[in-house]
Length: 88
Image 1 (spheres, rainbow, N blue to C red):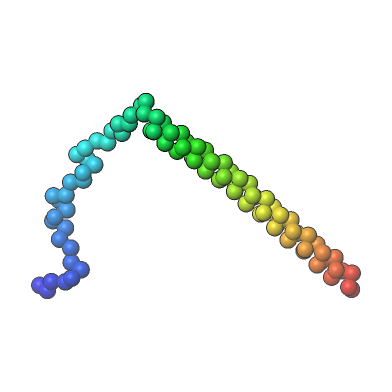
Image 2 (cartoon, rainbow, N blue to C red):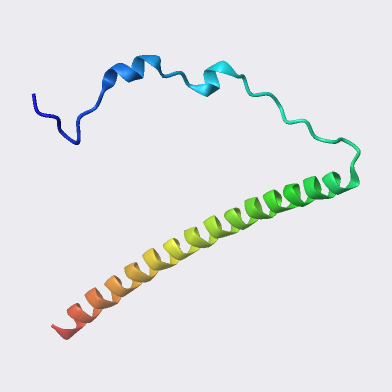
């Protein structure tokens, strides 16, 4: 039998163990009353809040642009149809 560069030895998979199965992840240990950590935590919460607000604004703007484009397209179609009938 010829060895191929793309061949796989699937027998080794039987011995594989995932590290996440062996150790359960727990909550991180953080200092509760450290002012530096509290400032970092506040900054993270502010950024998360700002990101959420920015996403809402972007979604609203996207919806407005969609409505404007669709209404603008409808107006152009009406104008084209009107000019077609007038030119007859």
